[in-house]
Length: 519
Length: 73
Ligand code: SF4
Ligand code: SF4
Image (cartoon, rainbow over all chains, first blue to last red; front, top):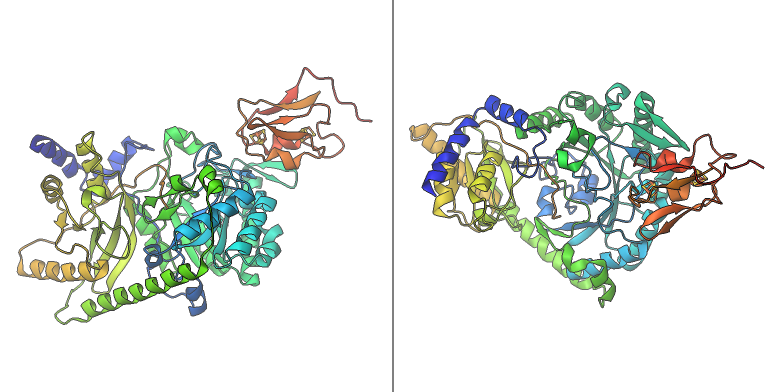
């Protein structure tokens, strides 16, 4: 074990500097499940940021829009829309598409009636479930009858559930009226380009008005329809978020322009997600070795766009038909067969009571953070650190290091805490096989962090983390996350000041490849 | 000739079904099939056969050489 840890340390040191890490990623382009570790991502600034109050009011309990809400609320997607009207190079529709949170067509397909039943069954069992999304497997608006029929049925039985849909935008202008009529809460449009020159490298073809278009023309039509759809939604007063997939060398530089274009047309949030690409996905990008961005490349782009508008950093690119809350997948309990056999009664009162408790909890958490920040002696200078946190939800440090399927990354500075994203990992404790390899990928996923906060951690991984320059912290077990990282940060700054430790740049981290299963 | 769907390649995404002007496409045993005698190759409706134009899997909606050429009335 010790020997192995030492061997790992070798690799760990190799990947500390950014260049070496990039080299490593380049060598293993499109690395699959064996490869990278973290999944950094997108994030609303966990709080209101500069959103207008009326918008914040609508999104604050939406797990896809507010990171903080993600601790308390869950959303589910139902796969009622199998057909698509465009082809993307990062998508092979046979399988789950990690980039667009889309289950593959091989995933369970539901009729609108089955879907509505499933939604009601899940909402009755899980009071946190407050949002229903339709995202695929194809494009919801290429299957308008199925999509809107599902919304209609759900609205009838469970009127408190918010409805949202994700679309590529091609058919959007034709459906804005209907979207409004069904009281859809939010629409997400995936916009990767606003320039057909760039777009032709992402979209091989579209099917539009009874014709297949290819090349620049396809990309031009798609872009025009997307932006027109966005403008129409804005005019109709429907909240619209834009997702973009960051594809290094293809649209990474261009996304700043996309950001400006969507902001000026009224998108309230922009979510830049890393390309997820591996040969075994069978996509064009997977097969031609197109790599995804590293954690720092992604963060740099998100930071660059943040001055322009609200960026979303907490998106996990969850698989769209998963059911659950923060890393916990309960899909198996709600298979079509089981749902059809269930006795379901929709208990709106119990759901409301639960949600009121949550609101109280959330207020306590905010109060604790404010109190810690307000304490005297906090002269932090301009030091900034990243901290990784293992959590099961509720805003607390309550997950064992070995059980964590992801780490939440916070940036801490004099300005307080800022949620940066998630890094997904394979559970370190999966019992024997390949544990050391997994530990290595975990370390790579949080390589840019100074400390990792956990409820509990074994001696062995502790040593390896320390050797990698990451401080394993279990002293704040079950405490509130933000309060704890601020308290730690104060001590950290003190130690740096006293010369006990040196503050160093921690380098880059990997983004794990592969579909995320849990919601 | 009519069009046919190569069943082993069909993902059952259903995209072709609503596009057919002749309602010639149906779901059958987990894939989609074209009823050859209803198919007009889209002649009289569109320039391109709709099923082939929308299908995400290349060469899955193809001409069925085993069937006589469609004659526009
Ligand atoms: S070619 Fe046209 S008419 Fe024939 S099955 Fe395809 S869509 Fe229908
Ligand atoms: S569009 Fe192609 S893959 Fe989809 S159902 Fe029709 S034949 Fe099958």
